[in-house]
Image (tube, each protein chain N blue to C red):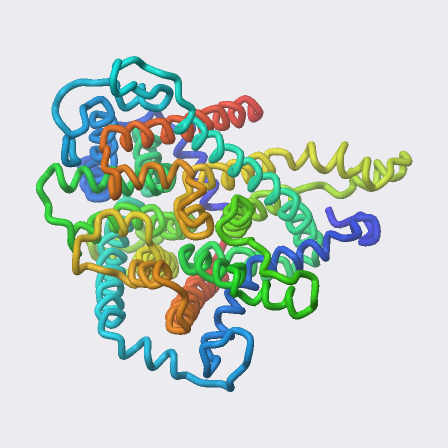
Length: 269
Length: 308
């Protein structure tokens, strides 16, 4: 495939556009990160390096409780959706194909197809109609729904790469179904499970549109808190919290990527 | 990998489809029931609400009415109760459509060269480039948009730099314009354009390029007559992945448009937060959902036809 000489494949300017693309994607985030360390409020003058805005952000009680809420919800939603996704992946991928498999697959992916704003208002009217009070519980329920496909994808991909004879061997050695799963299949699936869990966690941690609709008074999450602050004007504190959240997301994505890659490397294919 | 494909194929072409066994149904049910109950069911509520009457103090009244849909095209005269054509809401849909289209084209203009460039790097470097393009997708969209607003606002670094260099005397109005919303959409969904095109270009057989070159085709001809047509499935997929979320986007128009340059997403949200007309908001949601589904179905049909 790579027979054509490199010179022929090259289009002048494409390299520059690639750099433009990366600058557009990363530039704003880098700028906000740099300003979060500026000792003074100014955006024109560099007042020296300082972590003051981080300290300020951390000691702000509203942000503290929003952080706690966000982590609690992301942790719970990721855990529940990952368990559901493991079970669903086992049913979808192990054993002969069953009638309705396409429908089941479409349902699992439905949360990715529906525009987020539509899911948001739909969840709102539904929760109010069945008489749930808006709060942490409604946020959690809504998050579990859209976390399922994100947890499912890497888990299913991983499971597809594990051939069936490992479980068969375990069963031949008198392991029951649960033992074959717990001691043979699950350890082999672990990279996919971990990767799915991490993705579900950040997707939940980052969600704004749906959370904004189904959150009640007193159940503010970090993105909602940031949105509220931006509405009243930029402060260096916003830069500090934003930078922190950017770093957390980047760490998690890199983690998920590395886990997944180490998983595929060790796999015999 | 080979094993996985083998299993997949034998599953598809083997014995006639079986009914799902009890054990597997039990495994599948938590995920499916959750989605059915907390997503499909709520969507059904939205559909029903769109045909009801708006309550006086928000909420709904259980009286059948198509007012919510009529409201998109007509305004009821307060005195004579006559229906007058009004394009206020239609224009919001029109603007959303144009914004999404412009964002899709801009994403293509930047995304195609980027994808091509990455796909022609040595194989060992490609995954690192792809990773670089993928990471922003997983980063909080709200915070990314906030950081965009930070740099383009009147007192932001870009305007400061422009004034310092002496290009402009007064801050350039970038934030809170249609351009800012478009920029925000491109910035939000650019990775969606790059990744499918990359996948398509990577599979492209570059010997075709050499053959064309031997037959005296110029570089531009090769690009437009050979590479673009062959990578079209990737381009179409990328365009859809940008267009669909752009059409229903909420954050970019809300923050970067300053609430003035409404798009469908904001119109829907407003009906449930501010002006409170649930049936009208539901109708807007149903229309948006329908547009998205129609686009997806057309795309799926075309894909299926191409495969045959």
